[in-house]
Length: 131
Image 1 (cartoon, rainbow, N blue to C red):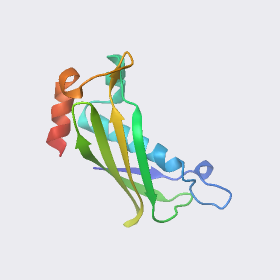
Image 2 (cartoon, rainbow, N blue to C red):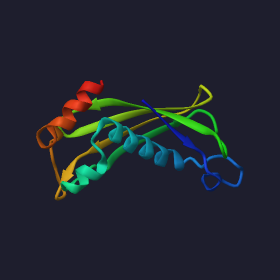
Image 3 (cartoon, rainbow, N blue to C red):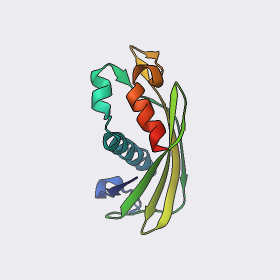
């Protein structure tokens, strides 16, 4: 599935290039969108007391982007276990890869790790079915 982000002026540095830190924000936008499309938004998890912090992130910048570029962000599940979920992102502008990235998340309830498969079996199965 693909999410599109249009680069805003404030996301660019003095050289007119999208600041590297913004790609992490783009990943978050795409991941939240992906969960919404799957039918299990972050709001519903958080309403039930579950949070999903980032525990690892990696970005490989291939080409620069600039103001008004539309970045298509392909989001896929890279790996899933009882306690962790990893996403892979491929970001393109007009078909040209500008960034590849991954993020890994855990699930916490009251600050303690929770097994997604046990706590949200429907979400876990929906993720498995999306593979």
